[in-house]
Length: 224
Length: 92
Image (cartoon, rainbow over all chains, first blue to last red; front, side, top):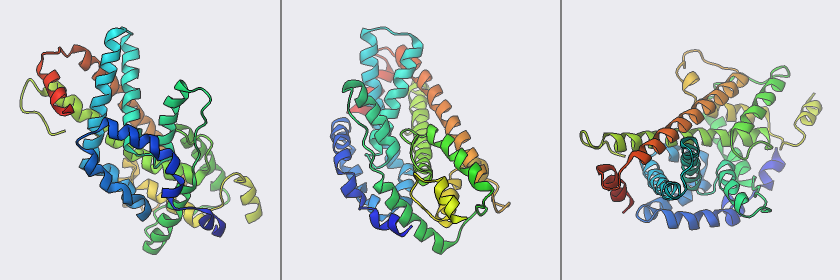
């Protein structure tokens, strides 16, 4: 446990190589919102509580919506030339929405890097997915130390009997979170916590975009 | 006993049971299914993980659904319509 903490580097260092392409893409995709979103960059060092809260902010949803709309526009342009089936177009929208979500995560999490790397793999076959887990470990150590002081534990203690079941379920969970199929249990838990909230935000943003687009001709548009 | 446990998760970095519980209870806060029943104080870790899997699957289905509907909607949008104007105004 002690070695876990001492091994970790500050997330800013370990992420350096991987955040770069994300940033570049981001700057390209969001022009108006980028200045405000960059102020969040210090969050990662303060701990994962803020990091998770990030997905719940309206600002984050606006940033995501902007990226989503841009991505959808591109899907639309490319699908109008070649005319694939409705199912394929739905899938293209799904992929665009996920990529936009990953870009919004700004390379801080494994799941987001995995989504983006998936895309890259198609373009450059032999590129390896980066596995910087150090930042996640750092999050674990900071997050749990603050939590243990608060003592707000709401889960039954682990024992010898429950551990195999927990590990088994964590494996299943790892397959549901992008890029976490081969990660350790603590990493899977940490990533899943972030991923759930990103997904919730994605659903909220897509719903309000639907409302906006389908309800516009009728009454006043709902705020996006 | 602790020896056996460490072998079980040999590839994983070793974290204490306390840290594990912390991670699971943090995860629990974001699960609507078990967040609601705050009265019943404790839930097993494996229950939390099960609910997490269910919830992620549910969210994935929702995103799939919304993607299909959005793509249909985008197809039906005529370039000169209100919707196209909305999209353009959002992009600028």
